[in-house]
Length: 109
Image (cartoon, rainbow, N blue to C red):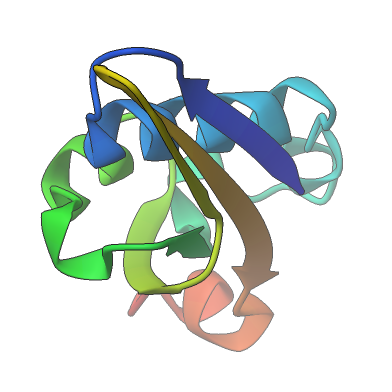
């Protein structure tokens, strides 16, 4: 879980990217190589919550992942704060990691 904010720019993608980075900062997935699988075998389902989901560039969010295959979905959530000439955006992110052991071990990931 993570939270990201764009304080002044009104950029939903920037807030979403920051939220995912925050979520990843709190976790380490060292178990995958310990099990003998490549870190690229991981499937990462990312869900971003922002007030305007259609304003998020899913490709830029996926690029945050250092490895694994990303599936990014964006839903209504987060928080918009409009005050005078400022538009602050708060995004929330959840990342769920899967490892298909059968597909990875057969080489057909």
